[in-house]
Every structure is written in C-alpha cells, then in structure tokens.
Image (cartoon, rainbow, N blue to C red; front, side, top):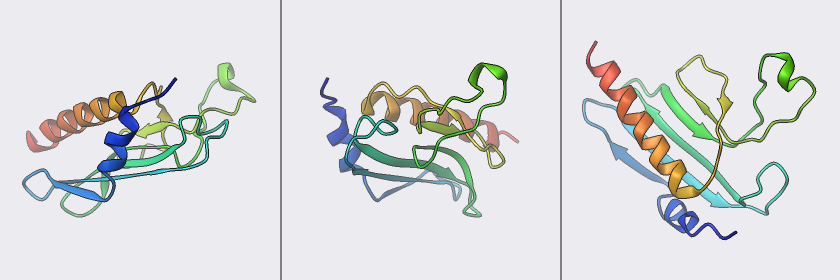
Length: 119
C-alpha cells in the first residue's frame, strides 16, 4: 500500500517550529531503503523541546525499544516508538501512516505544552 502522506512528512524535513515561551519542535524525515525494521522506507525524528533545549517529547524510529514483560520476551519489536518525557526510553508506536504520525505527534505535543505551561 502506498502512503501518500510520506511526501508531506518529507516536505517538513529540517523545519523548526516555534511553540511560544521558548518551546520548539524539530521535524526530520528522510527516505531509506525499506527493511523489516523500517517497512515504510522513512526514517523520522519528531521532537518537542523545552526552552533549555531538552527533548520533552519525541517520536522516532532510530532504534528498537525494550519492553518489559513476558509478553514481548525474545521478540524484536518494530523501531517506531515514542518518548513520553525526558526519562522515557521509549514505548512502541503503532505506525499506520505518515499523516497519522503527524496527527498523533502534534496532538501529544499540544497536550504536553498545556501540561508544562499550566504548572
């Protein structure tokens, strides 16, 4: 199945988006040869940063994540995952399309920004 949203994601490569009060988003995406670990043929890193520069939310597929629990024991998990906070080593993300990835990331980014700005 062809994911037409991949071009949308690629077009956002190297964009930095101001989120006010010093917060910012960095978007990176590039084509790669499809593999078992990256079947959609796109590498990406979508990150939300605090004014200090620390990543406070991230979606990427740079590495597989280790999941605790017997259910996943011995399995190699897909590389698509998200980091929900600074200390999070990543949880699996169910990549369905590039457009949905963008919707999910920006929705989570809005939620995180509401939380940190309300403190």
